[in-house]
Image (spheres, rainbow, N blue to C red):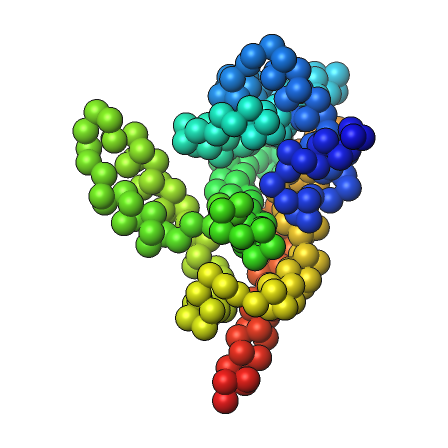
Length: 313
C-alpha cells in the first residue's frame, strides 16, 4: 500500500481534507504517529507535547528578531503535526479516550491564546499605522475581538460543517455531530461525585460550545428534523448524495478558516514586521468568508427542505 493510501486510512473523512492538508499536514502527522506507535507512546502524551510546543511558540513571536520568529513558526508547525498525530495514533492503536478528546480541543486554544498575548505585549508600545499614537490597550482590544469573537467562532462553525458532512456521508457513528439537548441531558444525569464530576464538567462546557454552533445554523436543523421525521435513520441515498455533493464544495472554506491559511497569514504578517495585520485579517477577510460559508450552507439546507415540502404538497 502506498504511503498516501495509508495516511488516508487514518482519516475520519477524506472529503473534508484538501490536497495541502493531506500532504503537508496529515502525512507528516501520520509518520509521527507510526513512530509513536512503535515506541509505545500513548496518544495523550503526544497531545500534551503538542500543547507545550504550540504554547511555547508564542514567546518566539514576541521577539523582534526574524530568526527567533522563524523558530516560533517551526514550533507551531511541529505542534500541528503532533495535533494530527495524536488522533491518527488513537485510531491506529484503538486508544480513543474522553480526556484525549478534551485535550485535543483544548490544545489549539492554548496555542493561539499564547500567540495573541505575546503579540499584544510586542505591539502595545508600537505606533498605530499612519499616526504617532501608541497601540497601548487598543491592541489588546483588537486581538481580544479577533480571537474570542472571530477566530473562535470561525473555527467552531467550520468544525461543525465538517461533522455535518461526515454525518450524512459516513453515518452517525463516524461523525461527532452531537445535539446540545442530548449533551445537557447526559450531563444532568451525572453526579458531582469523585467518579463523574470531570465528565459532567466537560459536558457542561461542551454543551455550551455546541449551543453556539447550533445558533448559527437554523435551516440545517430544520432540514435535519424534517429528514428525521420522514425517514428516521434510513435517509434515502439520493438525498444524502444530493446534500453531500453541495456540502463538499464548502469543505475548502472550512479548511481556510481553521489552521493552515490562518497561520500562513500570521507568519507572513510577522515576517514582514506588521503583526497587527493578522488580527485585522481575522476580523475582516476571514469573517466575511465565514458569513459567506454560513449563507451558502443554509441555502443548501433550505433548498432541500423546500423540495421535501413541495413533494409532500
